[in-house]
Image (cartoon, rainbow, N blue to C red; front, side):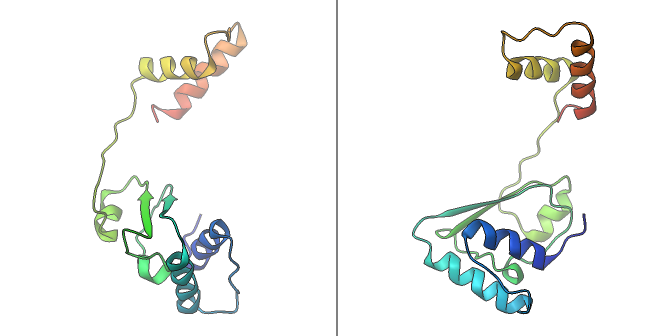
Length: 132
């Protein structure tokens, strides 16, 4: 999926419960988002998953004020973290095959029995996830 400032602004606006006009330019939309964040009575935690390229937080309208918005993002690229100037970085490791299988079975619940083809299908799912 191609990254778009406008698309990200739309997704954030949707979560905040506001509407943005597609006719407005990015800067106007960013100002509207910043205004919405500033009116929030509580801290907003914004989670962006699977970020593949850098972007300017201010250009999107994400405030850099720690009492208004905290940003958590996941990415496979340390370079993206560095360019966005993330304050804290956590390097997560994948699970080995046995750990992944144990976690899968745990999440299914102890009362779930995997028999026959279901066991093979479950193992192929765990293998496809590759420890993530």
